[in-house]
Image 1 (cartoon, rainbow, N blue to C red):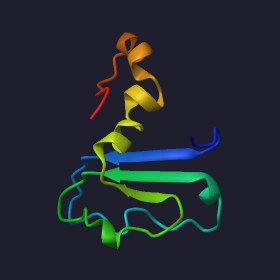
Image 2: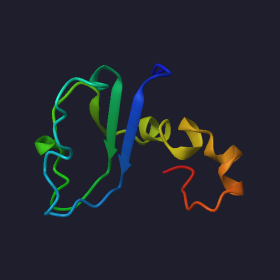
Image 3: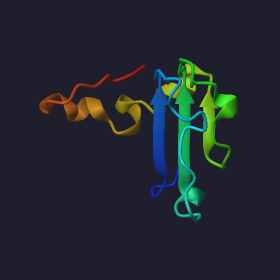
Amino acid sequence: MRRQDTLCTYSERKFYRDSETSEGWLEWNDSFALDTLYYGEYMNHGPGANASRHVKRPGYWVITSPDEALNITVGQLIQGGEWLNSSELNYTIGL
């Protein structure tokens, strides 16, 4: 289980254009939040989606297991099925 103060970012089945930086993100100027960062990628595709060229830092993961990916979906991570139905947001509860 991740710590409560963990910054969690998840990218699932995203299409990366060739014009996007292959590193995925710009480098931060200092170590702010790097100790608690979790950035997971699952089944991304496109010319810029080659994860071997993405940023290398602790907390960055390429997720290959659907079971692991399910743990960080809207339904599991933020219990979206309990409250998002009353919003006007478009979302997918699982994979």
